[in-house]
Amino acid sequence: MSLDLIGPLLNFASTAAVAMLAAVIGWSAKRSEWKRDILRQRVAMRQRVYVEFLAETDRLVLKSFDGKVSLAAEFHQMAVHLSEIELLSSDSVKEAAKDIWNDVLNSHTSDKKHTFDYGKLKATFVATARREIAKYEK
Image (tube, rainbow, N blue to C red; front, top):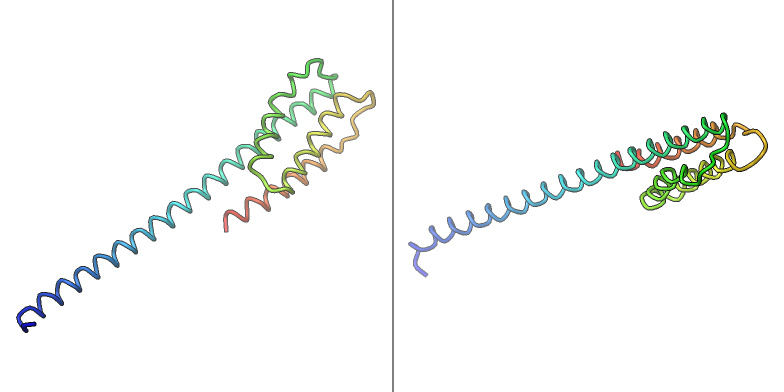
């Protein structure tokens, strides 16, 4: 090989290596950005579902003070939110949501006055949900 070709070949090789390195770094940075976006979306989705679930259960508990719900369809929205929680959330959040579900149903089906367990169950759910969300935010 002639010495005249070594210079241009080394120049081409170094340019190609730099271009490949830049492509790998760019791909890696984009991939990290995608992962962060996915995690942000997961947190936002959970927060939305949890808030809507609690708002609906609050509404139904308050309604139980006035009287029992006469239509099962009144529980549809709460059931939708519970299904979303079951699909998206950890086992501990699911269990806390199911405890609230049972308490709300009992507040409308039993003849006795509501025992106000709802406040404790809601606090447990909120604490469990916050722990789960904190894991995603790290």
